[in-house]
Image 1 (spheres, helix red, strand yellow):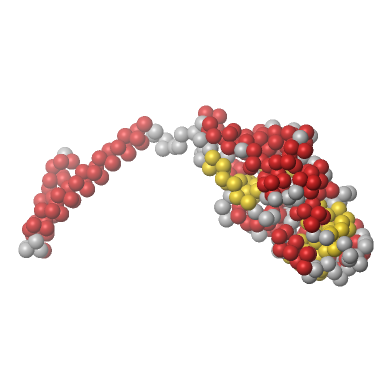
Image 2: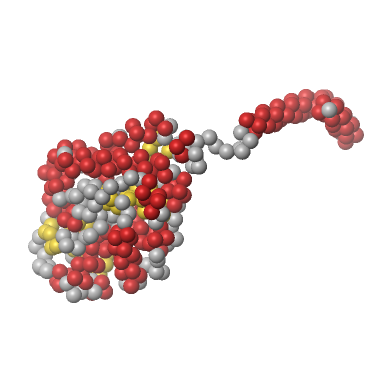
Length: 367
């Protein structure tokens, strides 16, 4: 039946061409051959796809047995900052995910806000930041999801001033130019320190700069103080002629978060579970092998060993489940930034959370 219809179609087509182009019979024969070949090729492909459809009547993508409702990712795009470069340098995620046919692409960012901007536009799948960047990202409409907490390291952040500065106390910061990455953990630490000492955010002149630019401004003397975190903090202590005015001890109660795009969190829970297991493993190893951590990171970051050891020794390692206590603390961060009119609208951080059942599936234990 198909052959008969095909023959009739060719005949009618040829008659139309002869009528329309009476002097192009040679062209007609060539085109007829090509048309016939294209038709047969298309017919064969149609039959092939039909056969495939019969073998897979539901037209679904094959997935692993333990993740039957999810599409398996082939590449995990991991956004990171220098403070978590050890995970990349050890290659543990690659080794763990390779048997599943999943590779890892690492993309470095100077700070959390830039990392979450990339996540919002679909350039990365997951990464880590301090407590503040997710607030700004959610307020801007980013579809992000908290997947784990990071153990707080209060002494790993500080406000620095030049060694010869007349600034001796927090109260002396009034009216001064203070640099920090907007929407970062250093931003929120500064807000807390000011309020604890009876100052308002409006009492200082905020200078929004990423770490590298802030360091340059600090060394040049164009700013009065710098709110910053490790390893930039440790490096500035050693080589930027700086003095610690105050650190985050007694102030910082959160260490930050690992986050994923909402789509990745919903579709790749098995991969996230594996990633968090490997992060927890490297964190536990790091806690017990601090000298080796410093020796590994020193040449990678271009920071001398003594400075790297100082940074490593004041860090608390570990990741934690996203508990109700953390959610409450994070909501306080959001409310404070809204109160200061630093975000355009009030947000509910729970809207960026997974269900308790999903968090339980990650099997994270409180350290």
